[in-house]
Image (cartoon, rainbow, N blue to C red; front, side, top):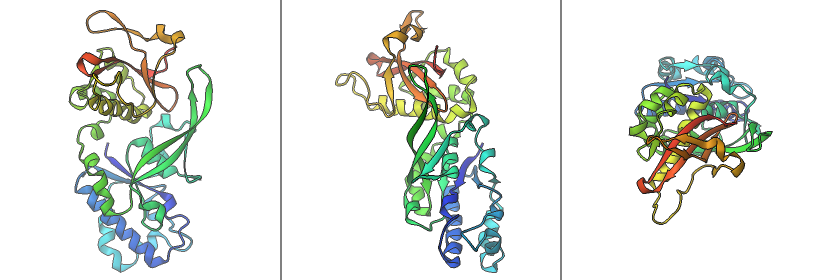
Length: 306
């Protein structure tokens, strides 16, 4: 699966920019795509509908822009790009569960799609909000709390973003990460675990958890594991009892600890009640802290245990 560059529809739908400004922004988009491909060649441009059918503001369109002879070379580059549309056909089917994303109160399907698939959101550089390399989104969905009650959740998330070629420098290390970003399945994740997560140790049973991992959970699980790896790598066990977590991580409640025992590699039953969460739904990643080795031992990745 290629790296997905998802065009933010909010950057062009309601623009009041003049035609020449919009035309310049499309050339800027091509420069941006060229810059990305200096680091990654396996990329695809994702749009809300076929790229050449997009309307740009009230009285301009990609087809009109493409028909302008001054844009012939820019057009040729776009024609050579792998392209996919619409948004809903890009995200895994399990993500079409009613989860919605908003930016500054406006529905943001493209930005949400980029977040869901772990891609890069790209925008036409026509307004100040699109001059940031990360954008804040509000994720609205359903999730089960620790008491088992399904609630409507509002969660703030960040999506990687670029509107100018110079923005790519901020994402260069991520784009060049040929391991985690190019893993597209649970089996691949298991096979690469030792190289990518040197501060995490996985019980053998986790191989089956990852093999059965729903496509919608691949990206959030990669994110949680990467956060746990970074937190543990920066941890000094002699100074702190636990790492400084980078997402919500808590021990299990006393009434549920009995569900968190697993057989460790030495044959003993151990308590793995620390857990991180991931969505959509009630995803849980259970582990225990091994201070002597400065490691986390991962025992379970899947739906909340009952």
